[in-house]
Image (cartoon, rainbow, N blue to C red; front, side, top):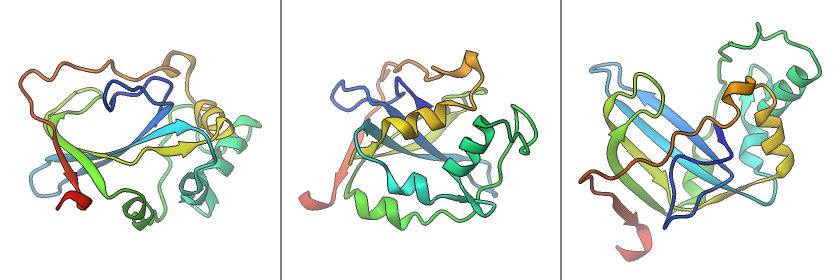
Length: 161
């Protein structure tokens, strides 16, 4: 999750946070990424409900903050439990899509991006909690917006079909 400047903008607007759900195909190794944009406002119940090994994401982050580094140190992978993506589906009936690249090394090309059109809300406390476990050199880790370089961004809107 990117905190601070986001890697995607809608009509030039930057957001408080951006969540990337990265998927890789087992057959050919191709990538697709679903991105959700967040503005600072109310608590996001989806982030509170994501369950990671019988604890919520925020429980783990606050435990880390309090020195309970039972996760294995700064550079650790936390296995995700079940995320009900129907929560995302109910929130957005519009999305943008384009072919780009991963935003982290090796920045692989030909990645299908889907950016949800409905901007979600996230509280200041949630932003702080998500920022806590990051190394100081990774606090503002969003890649700057890249030029389109001839790429087309398509928009799907259920209400205009």
